[in-house]
Length: 161
Image 1: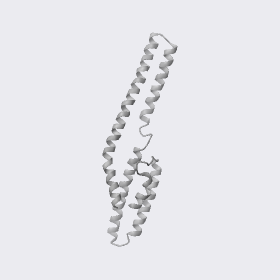
Image 2 (image 1 turned 120 degrees about the vertical axis):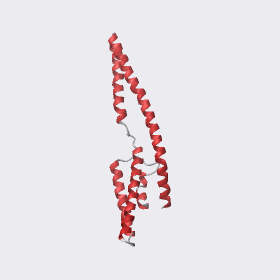
Image 3 (image 1 turned 180 degrees about the horizontal axis):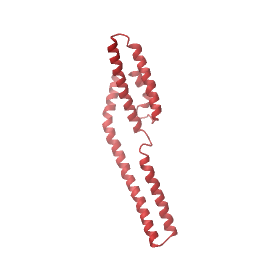
Image 4 (image 1 turned 120 degrees about the horizontal axis):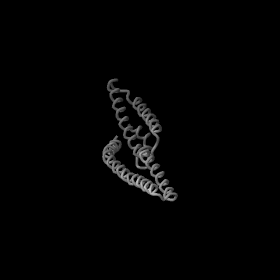
């Protein structure tokens, strides 16, 4: 377990950066292989059933650690939920540009109503975006409050191992 944590140390802590899922899987596979190789080289005494039970327990612990690493990594993703913001921003931008052109080129009642409608569209999107961003950060804060005790527990266990 200590070898696994040593190998995965680059993906842990507040200074760790987001990495692609494939890179994290590769690092996990390499670290898991190294940890299991060390276990196999050390676990030579005892009954085969005890050795296999200990190996299974180690594999379960490694899987739990990997799950924590993937959760921490996903929280660092700078483009997390980007698609929820991209389309509304494009629609608001198009509505704003059209409203400016209509305001400059046309002065009939229909054009004024159209312009006001487009202004309402991009203002609605703007304020909805503010609300969604606030909810996102509030949700991330709540998630962090739930995950933090587990992370601290794992950190404390790793110091004692």
